[in-house]
Structures are given as C-alpha cells and as structure tokens.
Amino acid sequence: MEIGGLQKTTLIDYPGKIATTVFLMGCNFRCPFCYSTELVLPAKMKNQPKISQADFFNFLKRKKDLLDGVVVCGGEPTIHQDLPEFVKEIKKLGFLVKLDTNGSNPEMLEKLIRRELLDYIAMDIKAPKEKYDFLSGAKDSVAKIERIINLLKKEKIEYEFRTTVAPGLLKEDILKIVKWISPARRYFLQEVKLDKEIINPKIKTLPLLPRSDIERIVREIKPEFKSCKVR
Image (cartoon, rainbow, N blue to C red; front, side, top):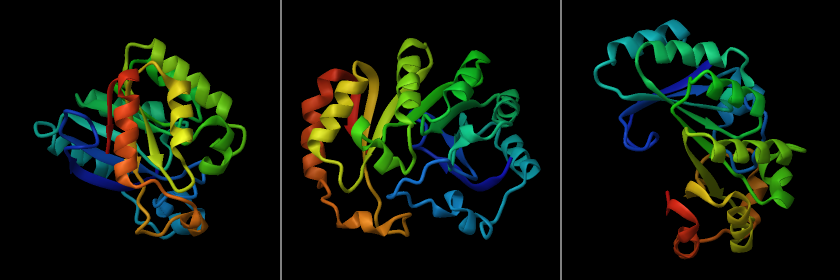
C-alpha cells in the first residue's frame, strides 16, 4: 500500500472520535477543484514522500491508548485491491475505521462492509447527475454512485454524504442532490478550498456560492436529514 501522508491527530475527520488520518496514493477521479494534487496526479505523486506500512503500523501501536480510530482517505482508497487486508490489520489493533470514498467502486465497498471491516463511511456526492462527469473529471460514474447511495441507506453501518460546494455548483444543483439522496442520515456541505494548487484552475472563473448562501440552503434542506450542516 502506498501511503502519501499521515495526519497524526484529528478531532474533526471522524465525528465524535480522536483519530489519525492516513492518505493513500492514487485516484481515479480528476475533480477540477481538488487540491490534493500530490496524491492524485502521477507527475506529482513521483515526488511525494512516502510512508512505509511498517512505520505506519508502528505509529498505530504506539498510539493505541490515545486514539479511537483511523480515517482512511486518499486519493481514493477503494482503487487499491489490497485495501481489505490493510484495513484488517488496522482493525486487529483495536481501532475503529472510517473510510472516505468517492463512491466509484461499489464492489470493493460491498466487500469491506460484508467483512465488517468498516465502522463509518463518508461518501462524496460531487454533483447532480447531469454535472457529475464535469465535477468528478470521470465518465459514466453515476450508476456506481447510485448503487452505493442505495447500499448505504440499507446497511446498519454509520455513514454520511457530503458535497463540496465547488465553483459552478448552484443552489438548484444542491437541491437536485438532496432529492437524489434523501432520506438519509447525514448530509454535509463543505466550502471549497481554492487557495492551493488545484487540478483545473479554470474552474475558478465559474460562479461560487458564498457561505451565507450555503447556510441558507442548509436551513432549507435540514428536515430531509437527521443531521445537516456546513463544514
């Protein structure tokens, strides 16, 4: 497993838990607003310092009594065929595991859920269906996304859906997403970060909803979810 980064302690990435976040290399999406270019673009990945699995697991062993869980994110973790074994080793140490995913690999997600290797799943919903290809930078992903939306709503596992309010994503788009995913347990809107290098800077020329508008939208859609807020 190629590990491209480690945030040793986080109080916000795993709701209600003290966790560490491990960043896996590689992604099958090219979201134009993505700022994790060193984990996504092959040319950048070559120069990204790697952390060995041995060092990562030694870190977890040292922090066993201080951390509740591990957040596995990327990049996109589910593109790695050895992900189940990687997560299994984390679980063996007694940690809860939260997976952050773009929802593009339902087969892998089903396998992880079936093996009871995950405790929480955070799934990105990039856009309404008609804008998905543009805001994910990938083609023909909607059917897979829909499959996972339906899967999570049926499973007992804790989950959340979340949308980064990127340039070009309008209020009407967010309302379409809400109609697509509701009813659901949790839905969060996230402000986009445009102060770093992103995959496609041209997206900055598109209209961007201010936080005040995002907060108004959250108040409007809140009844559809058990929890809904701006991050």
